[in-house]
Length: 238
Image (cartoon, rainbow, N blue to C red; front, side):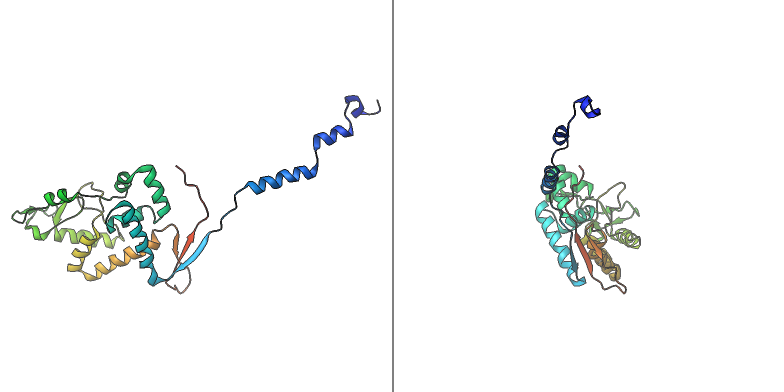
């Protein structure tokens, strides 16, 4: 025995069998790289300020048709899901419509229930905020069925706007429902048209402020445009 390799019966031929051909190893590595799915680069596009309303309305119309709901319900749902329509569609399959609407503060009323819950034109209505009696024409009812006098509603809406809220909750105790935009706009329009316009601007800007894929352009001075970034493929956790 001339050396340790001879002692253990290990030869150069055995080494070639163990180590293999470098070219073969590179081939396996290349095959693994080929099997990996290609990465999709994010798509970036600009949205002009005067096109924000159109872009927003497209998403609203899609959700209104998908869920068969009114526009202000669709907006509440989209804001809750940060205007991510793909995520919203995925959750519809996993959670179901009723649970999604409840989590977003959307209260739906059947037509017959809504009509029966509204005060009669011959009755007097007690506002449970100011504890005054009012005729039905001085009372407003929102989707969840709660009714309060117009003055109390208006004060509630103005206070919520001053806090920067665009989705204004019902005044009733522990009621999570979001108030109907039409009711809010009508009440604000009678008392403070500037506040009604401010709400309109809030709702329009929510397409950017509450959108996970759209941000305002950071240019200085601000150009008024928004930037949409459609991110690369992501897998959302269950």
